[in-house]
Length: 390
Picture 1 (cartoon, rainbow, N blue to C red):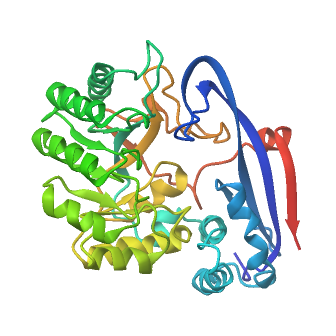
Picture 2: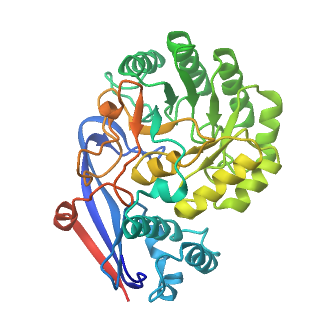
């Protein structure tokens, strides 16, 4: 393709979709299973247009991300869309006071654009390491429904079902309001049922009130030989000192840095001995450009870097990262095994419960860019607001 693509227009669409048998959780702010209920969810579609017709696209992000676009977006109009590192640096400066929000989604769409320009999937531009990605079930939070994840035994039953489906790993998201004894009982129930047959993890997502409660959960993980535990207690995942102390008292490896933003805070956390595994997310850490910086930094310290959640961009990332173990799929539930994603991906793309192959893996997309066509007719029909720049 001749010429270099100059950015001419940026379009942001807010649209909504409905999740069935789901309701809001007023305690955790995390949608959870509620039989017979439905929940409207709003998300965003981003398009970066160029003067040669190549378009970069991305589905994801939240309202706060796009609210930050005016901090940098006018400075990129007219620039070469292939100058991703330069645009990353410009955007990072523009949103430095706003926790780096907004730049991530723009960067991901630029990678999609570059892949289309060069007629290659994003993971090839990054440098492919593999294309088959081992899947891990990441559960929805617990609930109060009799047929849901309402008891430790229900989690054990579901872990068994996931093992039989072919998954290699199972991560527990317990209900936020339950006492620490409930968390401990769930760890043991799942460990006794499928321990040694699949890798096990737990993520209390900061539900535990005290450092002492976190210790009790960690010691239970030790007994059941969990592969890792995440975000144990209510510091919000940001105290490297607190998690260093946990690492001194618990053998189970910690996975932290989901709530760090960008490569520098991740490296600071590693140097402070606050984590064993490193977490990155392209929507949080400056897009694909930023997430790759985090992965390579972790590799420099000899640590693994786990990509947060699922989606086309995450598949490309993991395909290009050697030091990563599992593709996180979810948030699944025995009664709602659909992924937490809008129904806009075409060509059979799926991150749902039955998406893994006989080896328990999903495949990295092979078409140009992010490699998954988007149903723009659906998005147009469900659009609630549109903003364009300039």
